[in-house]
Length: 73
Image (cartoon, rainbow, N blue to C red; front, side, top):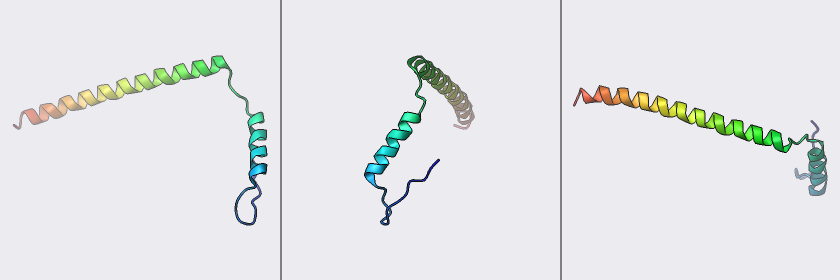
């Protein structure tokens, strides 16, 4: 990684910054449509599974809390 030279005031030259951003963007290997769709699908599936896991945990903990307080009232 390279360090952007700074002007004496501490700010980066905006024109040079834009040039370097464009050059960096050209070097990036962008994913194709298929890879993007597969990755998006995996994120949605894993998010759903995580939500269901925490829903189950919440229900189980809630059951035990309700059972503990039902006997004291």
